[in-house]
Amino acid sequence: MDKKKTAIAAVMLALVVGAGWALGFFGQPDPEVAELQKLRNEAFERRDQMNDEQRRAQFQEIRQRVDGLSESQQRQFREGGRERFQQMMFERMNEFFDMTPEEQAERLDEMIDRMEERRANRDQNGGGRPGGGRGGDMTAAQRDQRSKERLDRSTPEMRAKMERFRDMMNQRREERGLEPVRGGRGMMGGHGGRH
Image 1: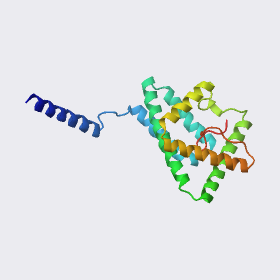
Image 2: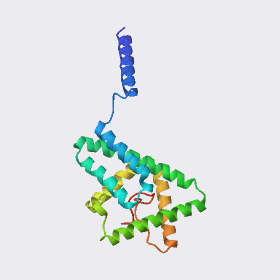
Image 3: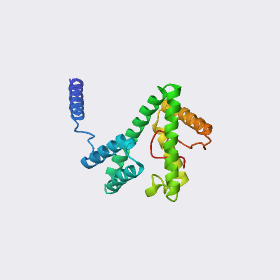
Image 4: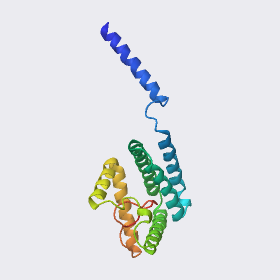
């Protein structure tokens, strides 16, 4: 009888926890964090329709608001951003590799043109990334650690696609007489670049 009661209690507990999770009682983000995550997601969705100045202003506003969050809120915000970024990269990689070779070459040229335009703007504005940029004040060891953590969170399939994409990008850059890129930042239409 005791085993039967224990089993029934365990099933009831599982049902209550499952219902609570399904209704969103557990794991709900802080409302302030959720608002900033929504703002960030909207900015990512519109980034190709904004010029560099508008993008910088939008992300600077978000960054300032994130700086005002508590440490646990910032951690929650960053974790959501990593998941969103990984999902976006996965979608873009799949989209790229579903293209014909001609479409891939055209996409690579568009991306290279944007990267070179951003590099020229940085050089014209005194070098460096405007507003400090992401990781601008990190040491080489910290940047390496961040890259390692990013790799650890990705799947083997995604790593293979990123490697293949980087090789294709560098081959196309070489054909155009440009230096190769290092790493993956900025290559899928993001805000990074060569440096």
